[in-house]
Amino acid sequence: MYIFTELSLIVVITTGVAIIMRIFKQPLVVGYIVSGIALGPYVLGVLHSTEFIELFAKIGISILLFIVGLSLSPTVVKETGKVSLIIGMGQVLLTATLGFFLMRALGFENIHSLYGAMALTFSSTIIVLKLLSDKGDINKLYSKIAIGLLIVQDLIATVALLAISAIGSGVIEGSNLFGTITLLLGKGIVAGIILYLISKYVLPKLSAYLATSQELLFLFSIAWGLGMASLFYFIGFSIEIGALIAGVTLSVSSYSYEIGSRMRPLRDFFVVMFFVLLGSQMILTDLPTIILPAIALTAFVLIGKPLIVVLVMNLLGYRTRTGFMTGSAVSQISEFSLILMTLGLALGQVDQRLASLVTLVAVLTIAGSTYVSLYSRTVYAKTKNLLKLLEWRRHFKREPRGSDNGPEMVIFGYDRVGYDFVHVAQKLGMQYTVVDFNPVSIKKLQASDIPFRFGDAEDVEFLQEIGVAGARIIVSTIPDFKVNKMLVSYYRRFNPEGIIMVISHDIKQAKELYLQGATYVIMPHYLGAHHASNMIAEFAFDIEKFDKERNRHLHHIAKREQMVG
Image (cartoon, rainbow, N blue to C red; front, side, top):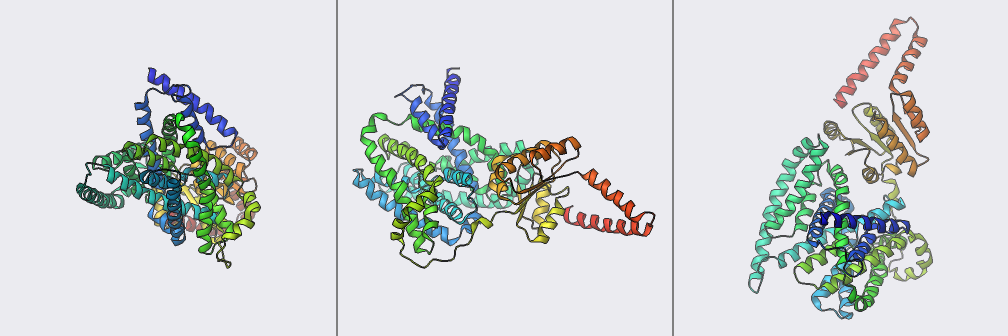
């Protein structure tokens, strides 16, 4: 029961600190780490059951990496293009090189400098996506480049974790080093081939069946993520690598968005324990010795990292403003950096002082980058004359307008009357997406080559991911009043000028939807009766006109059956 009480106290204190962070518009991650410091031995001394907290932290990191893996679809990586790859590789190489020499200049030995340099290199996918989403810039050019850069970083981080896992596993002394690494790589290749075959031939059919039950899909996602993490740990790799690969194998599934959104609440709880544990492990007695290095490294990340991105993008022909906006978005260190320190600490390759230093830099850069990113336009306006000194190329390529890449129309529900709206969107040449929660409908949409997303209209994070707020027209054919009310409320909060049409079978509910902000409420019975009464008013007793209308209706039904069912 003491463990339960301790966990309850951790959650209560962390929630209170997180509320304070929210008031000051800081990322909650900062609040979690600060909570850990407060709960640790130097302040309140509440944390005693570290074994259980470490277990929760492991689960949180596994789920976090599993969700990151879901976004690393080969299709997405391909779409980011050569530009993101070049910018990502250039940024990582330059940041790591300069970071290594900076660490050496601060007095750290080679292995610690190498770890520190890698930690400075990576940026936080979660923080960046949240900031871009809050700014409403998720579909702009610089955002797409930043996201592509993050994917490249994630891939490099995966390789780094794999290398450290290989070096740190087993007995690797002298001549055994090459043999151990070769054996691990061999196991990895065999496991990769098997997983590729499973992901291509087994998982699509299995996930389609599991998607018929949301509880089953959720349970399978946990089992797959944690099971693969344990399997890779058993064959000699780290749990982190296994969790990441588990996500990658499911990333090509049509249900990856839904899996990710279902897993996020679980991630949000368990990952809190990871950051709280990190904060509690900071040795504050080392603060006098790490404060100056922390300030130097923080300045390098907040200032040097964006300048590196500006320089690389300028060499590729992008304007300084685009480079600065991209660089300011990634001016922090990542969860991967903290995972890297935790892994290095467990393997005995880094000491607690370096781990505390990197954790402190994470807190400072995440907090600082929030302001840099939110006020990036103002900062650019005041520094653009200085930034021009980095312009090696004076002739820039024409930059496409990334804001036009989101869906103009989002249609919720296909089987009922969604087909008619798809036909209109195609006829008008709109960029559109169909959202459906029925695996049978998903198969029909796939067969008809119609752009779709499998997901729940009530899931706010899912709505953010597919860009509902930025769409010009929203159509919901879902008959559930509560779902439509929430959808109208969410859309109007971010887009007061857009068009949103929802369906209703009840007059009272239709009036409430109008009050909520619906542009038009479709009432099938009303429209049907209205159309039929107009036919009588127009055709009177002319049976030939009724027959003509009947045949037209039968033709439409036949065409609809062919397309939908």
